[in-house]
Length: 146
Image (cartoon, rainbow, N blue to C red; front, side):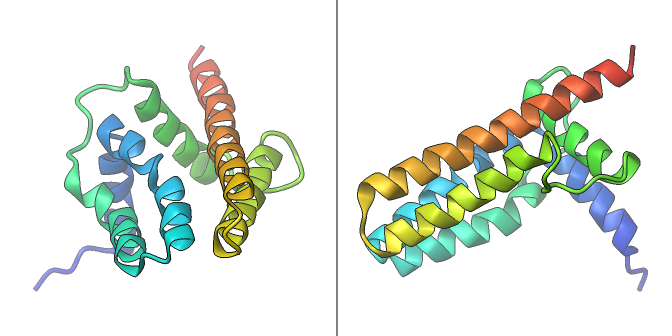
């Protein structure tokens, strides 16, 4: 039995996740997790976690790289693997992703405490900062080709 190497599996997952349907369908996962915690809905929480894991397996690699979300996923991979960067940190643009992660944890905490305004604010900040981080990476990724 020929078992694929970890590098091959990782490459396959990145290619499949680059399908814009994969990337865009994962954007609401964070808000769904916060909502599940707020509602104390264990089944919804489990479904969202399973969706996060299964998502890249469900979509084929994109036919082209024209879609913004495709380039966002490719830019994230480029940023990590080719540029040797991390995804969070104190430098720009990683500080956006770090602040977004803090916003997400604040949203989860607010949801657990049943504070809807805090949960909503943390969720919006989290998603907005993640998309901002991706936008900066796409800009840099696209600029490297010129």
